[in-house]
Amino acid sequence: MLVDYHVHALGHLTSRHTLENLEAYLRQAKTRGVREVGFAEHDRYLSDGYYDFPNLEKARSLVEGVSVRIGLECDYFPNKLEEIKKKISAYPFDFVIGSIHYIDNWMFDHPDYIEDFKKWDMDELYEAYYRLLAESAKSGFFDIIGHPDLIKIYGHRPKTNVVYLAEPALKAIKEADVVVEINTNGWHKPVGEVYPSKELLAAFCAYGVPITLSSDAHQADQVGRDLEKARNMAYEVGYRELATFKGRKRSMVEIS
Ligand SMILES: [Zn+2]
Ligand SMILES: [Zn+2]
Image (cartoon, rainbow, N blue to C red; front, side):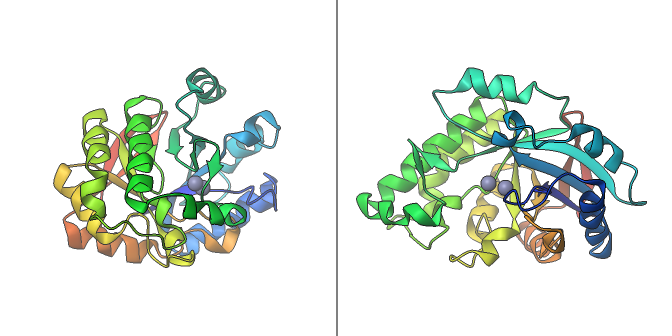
């Protein structure tokens, strides 16, 4: 069974939560054999009023054979824990993804700020990134850790093996009993590699960390993109189950 637990129906505010748009996303899911779609917009769109919860609820019965889950992709900032808590309790979400897009105030995945990579030693940057990832898992706010090696987005690599640098996060994620996603969007970014890499995914598997699948679609035609490829990779490294969520309760389904 294929599931897609990280879908932005608002795109980059390039579309809205109209029933037409939501239906287009769900039809694409059906075409690609995806049985569950988790809509998860960025938390900044909560306060801006772009989340249309009544329409998202209606979307649950829009396309036969495709279940809808309503989620949130929430930035993790170590100094904004109260704000995060508030955002997560703004709606009875089915699941919440915790994502690191910032180190201090640097939005490292934004092409406008790519020059700032030069300010860092790559090993230290990866360590800082994985410290934050570990903290986000320990915070207890999240069900899924988003794109768990996003720091590689523009191809900057550490000297030291990434699995070694990621180890504190691997441990924290396991102890916190949180899921990581295989996010296929990485294949379409400058780095040209899925998040996480196969090597890192194998390490997650060895630690016994559950996974789910996601496209990080920002437009309808991207829903379900490369999920079969991701599923095959997961199977190859030893995974046999995928995590799904409803009302923030996890259940596991067979990966086949
Ligand atoms: Zn993200
Ligand atoms: Zn996203």
